[in-house]
Length: 66
Image 1 (tube, rainbow, N blue to C red):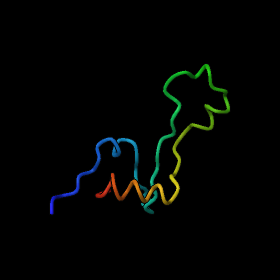
Image 2: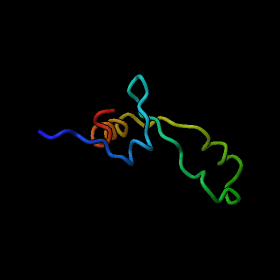
Image 3: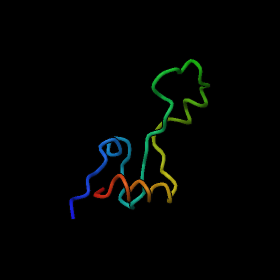
């Protein structure tokens, strides 16, 4: 059985917390800030935690060693 490889795009985008949840950086903060409202910019600050089922899929298929 070959070794499972981590998807290199996923390891740049997701982190696994100590309790096993998957954190991700929110999208929509790279450019085009003039189009967004200040509330949108504030709401996309920081990181969020994925829903449990989505996080389980990320860990199973893309971060098997994470």
